Length: 249
Image (cartoon, rainbow, N blue to C red; front, side, top):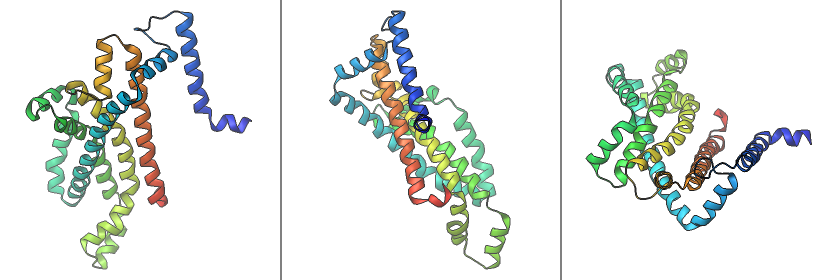
């Protein structure tokens, strides 16, 4: 019994928090528009209907996953370039830091005005939020290979491409997946930020609409789905890492 409780300790803690939340909301008769009880949130979620939830969820996932894949496509080659060329590193790294230091919420409206109100600006915003940790962590992994391995490779006159495919990239796999795990959660955040600025559907849009209409239970339900979605995507990346690169997990 003790082992069972210990194994699922986090689950029991979550259930306990929900229970205390429900008791507090009922005992203090908190207004629904201030802090709804979990039962009120569940009731609001049922009233909205499965089809509506799926519509908003799929809209958010489309933006989050698209931005995530674009971030990977840009970040990995860029990390290789930064590792190979000191000149490129000195040129691009300051700009990458500037981009990362710029509040995306502040420039999101500008991106929407420039690119229009479709899916493209939301994907761009998500990409800008997600790609930085992938670049930095991958470049760190590629550059962290022991010098003696690189010297051995060059002593054997191995082509530069083999140096990367057989030494640097395998060594950097843990770094790459660490960044991918961070980036997938940032992609969901980026999608929500983009939907706050310009969207007609999506969980971020639904939160904004619900709070403006004082439908706080719907906003909490949307938040719960967003957290669940983010955790599921994180778990998917962890699963891919363990399944295909178990030697580095």
